[in-house]
Image (cartoon, rainbow, N blue to C red; front, side):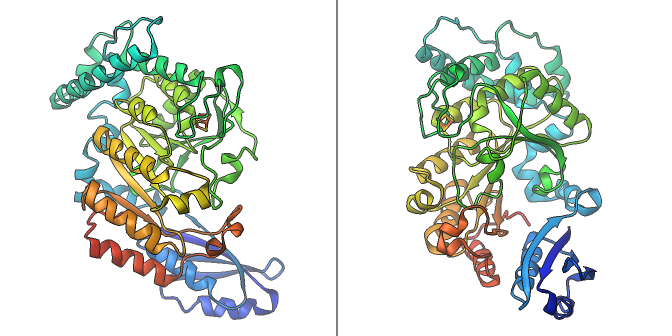
Length: 438
Ligand code: SF4
């Protein structure tokens, strides 16, 4: 991985800072951009996020450095790990089906869901729809196993007759009804979004997109991802890195489900490994299900979420999501309420992660916050080992930086120290986590 670091130094110290940066052994080149804007551009060659983070932290501690930002270089030359991860034994075991779908050796779940026949009446009660749904979920996984064991499973699926009403249609019908009294997440606002009422997330009847692009900045196995970023979020993390989209500061664009489907297809055809549903996809679940009714290319659905959604949403995701990439932000409800206004965070998040493990493949993203080792880091890593297994694919996210309203939380006004990063990695090793993403 190649890192780009932009350093802004105070004018009278700029040469001093420049010389000090040169001493770090993993820095390839230091370039003084211009004395007028006092910026230094640093190229680093790091084998993993950890050493990149260390470099950033070291530079940050030099006297005279005013601010520092970094970026991962885009493009295949910047992410050789995106190719090597496909041969990594641990990744291959954990993400076996996902890897098969990205290679078109197996069909994505939504394609199977379209062939799974459902019998329901549009007049049926919601209770009745859920009963049918739960039964069809069991049938779905039996069908998936049968298809997966077939040598040419994609061809087999294509030959199967498309039912008049499918398991995917049933999910859409349930999600539509939920929107009339929204309980997609644990806030359970109960607003009628189809009539224009807005709940806590301020997401309405029509899906609003912030961006859609081929993205090179996620975990190696996801890269390049077909990232589709929606507006709005049901959490309000003071440290949100995407606050302009999550809190509706930026303006998005309304898309129809058919248009979203064309975006998904075009990204896959342009070489993306997946459809990476991000921003926060939870409030838009109905729209995502409906989008994939119109998608005909084989692409794995990756659900990248804050994990703060209802059990009903978890159930609708089964038989639809191929790979869950779930945030695990806090180890205590007290911290979650204080920093993200998120009551019942722990029980919600752990329940949804368990659903992800049961119904698909899973990557857990553990955001490490400064000053939260005992209350959050220890508790989460132990829970992962005890409940998901020591071989759970886990990404320790060590790149926290203060942003948006983090100044309201005293301990969140700085980056992690090198000591905190090392302590986190050591703890993961002591606990015995064996499948950490490098
Ligand atoms: S998704 Fe939005 S409207 Fe629905 S319950 Fe959650 S916060 Fe409320």
